[in-house]
Each structure stands twice: as structure tokens, then as C-alpha cells.
Image (cartoon, one colour):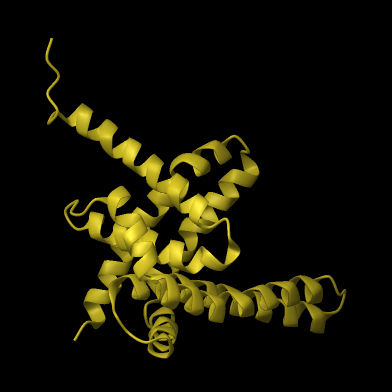
Length: 201
């Protein structure tokens, strides 16, 4: 009995195992909170590369990308995640106030947090793809989030959908822990490539 390593079943199994390994590497890399930016940019870098006709080696390339993007990824993430956390807290606080003004303030804060979250996703992908400074990366991330409403909506809906499914169906957390983040990044990679191609000089 001979197993063809080039068969679709073998290649599909190899890809699945690679995505599981990539997912676990990403989760471990996020354990120190300050490394979330570097880990996310590294995940997006290998996912974007792999989405381009399955080039690159996601597992082998992850930690080199993590080290290469560490400083810019960490600082860019810090510049966006702190305001997101403050806005999210503000939204919860104001919405708990039983007044029309409090509800309006809560909605505005929630929308601002969602916009900055979209900018965070774009920023991590920009860190992964372009060698720009932090200030320019943040500016471009904000502009992309506003200029690409359809793709921005798609990017935001990927993590939102995963979280909602996990809340409504807790066993789905097992899938999140095995392939959720890596597959989500792979899906987002097509949106990133499409958005970047429209604005690349």
C-alpha cells in the first residue's frame, strides 16, 4: 500500500494540521498581553502570504515574522487597543444609565470602539505587509477603515461571528482553540489583499 503525498486528502490533512499548529502558536504568543500586536501582525503576515496561491510556510514563518514585527506591532497595537478598551468601558457605563442622553453617549462610544477595532485589524495587516513607520501605519489604518466600508464590515464580522457562535454554542470554543484564529485570519487575508490592491500606488 502506497499513500500519494500529493493527493488531495493528504494535502488537506497537512493543511489542517498546519492551521491547528499556527492557531496554537498564535494563542501562546498572545499570553503576555503586550505581545498581542506582534502575534496578530505575524499571524496576518503568514495568512496573507498563504492566501496568495498558498505560497509561504505558515508555521515555519510565524516566529520570524513575530520577531520582525515585534516593536512596530506592539506599539501600534498599544496605540489602538487602549482607546478601544476605554471606549468599550465608556459604552457599557453610559448604556447602563437609564437616560436618553446616556444611551446616545453609549451608542457613540460603541461605534467609535468598533471603528477603532477595524483600524486595529487594518493596522496589524499593514505592519505585516509594509515597512512603514508607526504614525503612518496608524493614519493609513484609519483611512482604510473609513474608505473601505464593505471590506471593513467583513473584517469586523469575522471575529464578531466567531464570538457570537462561541457564546451561543459553547462547544464551539474547542474549534476556536484549534483553528478559529488561523482560519479567521486566512479569511481576512483576502479582504486585506483586495483593499491594499485598490490603494497601492
